[in-house]
Length: 220
Picture 1 (cartoon, one colour):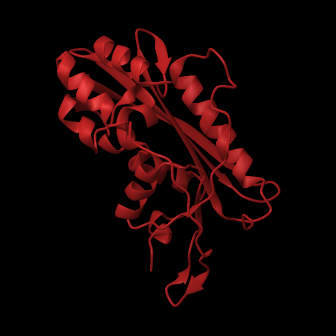
Picture 2 (cartoon, helix red, strand yellow; picture 1 turned 30 degrees about the horizontal axis):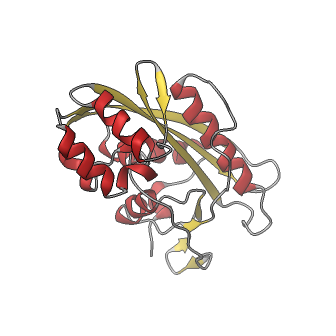
């Protein structure tokens, strides 16, 4: 997964000489998700949901990721400052290993234990995506993207050095592919962007299901 906590306030775009634009609201504090969308030509408005990610309890990993994404999406879509008709995107990621869902480690010791368990093995990174039209009667579509991640056989010194940077403490699965942790991931099967935190191909499909054109989300 990818890193961090960040929020921003942006002007809600409207319409220009290229025609009406679809407004995307990102219900996530992740700067990696924001950077991924921006690199794809989209400048979302960021509104952090504040949802307690521990509240859903012991669900299968893929279901947990999807339900948390739906909860974040619904929470932000219900806010008064989200314009009617905007598309609200909620995402949540967990790493599945040994049948368990692994989110963010609680502390450095947990991150070290996690890496000692993951090294030389493979896990599945699930990212739930929920896309909702804001406003009364707004439609919602949702799906989970899953990507297999193969971890390198890192030694204890490398684990200690990585955990000491603080990066793995803030991300699901205690690793990134777009940061310092990228050197410790030897292969990925599936969508790379999904491991960073948002699957662009899946998001395009969900946008189409709501009758919106993907290029309408691009900055103009």
